[in-house]
Image (cartoon, rainbow, N blue to C red; front, side, top):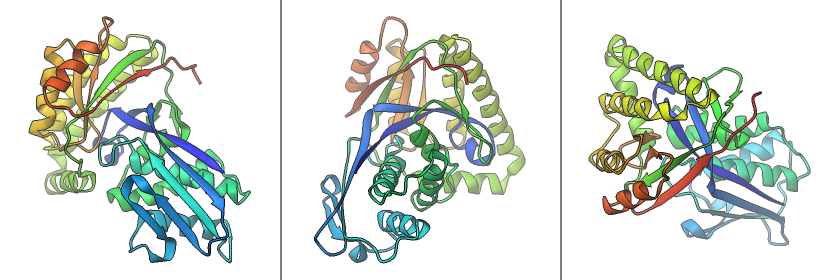
Length: 312
């Protein structure tokens, strides 16, 4: 059985979302992870992931390995014993360690493909919960936003520990995503922000509250069709993320280039210190921004449109 899952970007609220504040995230369907699971005559459960030069039997994978943990956890949860002989093929066009949800997308696609092959289909809620457990291995103390938006493949307004709220997009808008060429060390940046907060919670709670206010204004702008207002909010959100020490010279260079090329606003997206930045394109289109990001050193550009979606 085959399954796919899209990438994602966080529009607003990264890092603060770990501390109970809201965040907005949207799927990026231009990139995705694909998993194909087949019953095999070859003994064992084999993982074939040519993108990362992996071809190995599950038991031989060094621990702790997220793929091995995911398969073991799912088979245990489904009550599958003994383990069947399977070949699991994984491919992905989502850059690794880029803030685009690569790990979550592989997890979600693998969970769905494996559960379908075993004729034990799972609800979206179950898929997301299972993927979240693996996100802990990738990111330490994740918020849960990656596995949520990737599982549901819809724009979401996310608050950790609360029921999922789908985001109503009144009018479509276009985002240009520029990669820095630097891997995003999400686990480390999340841990460093936690250390800042633990050392001085009063100061950093004010910053998180500021990000929360921006998220709420951004949601209103999206749901009322006033998407142009997102630009200044992006710029303010980025300034607060700079205070949290999670930007980088590479991110700041691309963000400045995007703004100078006509972006209505730009900010880092995800864990920061590498990975991706995002820019809001004006009505005239994204081409000038994309060209400026390439000229500023971005090795990969993705242009995605956040399409209109009905109110819940």
